[in-house]
Image (cartoon, rainbow, N blue to C red):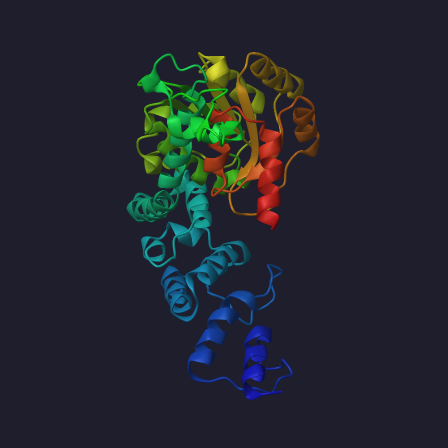
Length: 385
């Protein structure tokens, strides 16, 4: 085995008694120490740790600075998340010095939001700056794609196949739709149907209600939903409402102009009453056939299950496009209540997880009233290839 392979195995295995016989020095030794402080730590059984960060914010802040110099940001974010979970560093996240040292990411924002009610005033500004940085990065990644997808879908849904005036005919799309009727001897296309421009509408074309479960397991979904809610609310063709719920329901629609303020208006953790949240959301819908209701929840219902399902059935019968997202995040397969998901699917309302990158396409499909079940199948096939 080459020296380089031994070195790599030594860094992976950790500890002097790893069997490689490889000694580390310089930057490698410092990198190994940073890893050992996290991953060599014993459990919570009272045994002495071989590593550890100690209950000191300055020491943790230095450790955070070290790992940022040794590892890429994607690895740093994983290590930060592991540190919070393995070493119970939640309390130290309330220290401004530590907040200024961390690498911001969605998971860390979720942790901070769960601490919002106990956060000391001196840490609030640092926490708010960190959250704003993450939100700004998400907006750069998602805003333009979302607006383009939604605008395109609204334009397509407004097209008519019975244009009343020649000026209303979309000749490019009309020709494409009638190429099968091309007559070579006349060098022309005989249209059997016309495709017209939809008239530009300044009025609201769709109502969108985002109903977000703010239980602790939904933290990443809350962050992404808030950003998407702000984007949708900025579009005049949509009337967007956003509510969050646990056992109570809070309407945060008036905070949609600032997703950071909106996020600090949430309260992660607590129980779940989906039925109550749907009941409130029903009252926000004034034009059912032009409305999209998106429930973002793991479906673990603490309220009246039968009433929840009945309300969903009422909404779909009235013409509301109902979509249930088990998660809106990049975290992979979520935990959820399979029985409730199956009951919704039997009603024609598929429940599925959606990534932030796929959400603009989902909104376009909903606006055009396409079959959401088929959209999910195609999206799964696309991501599998």
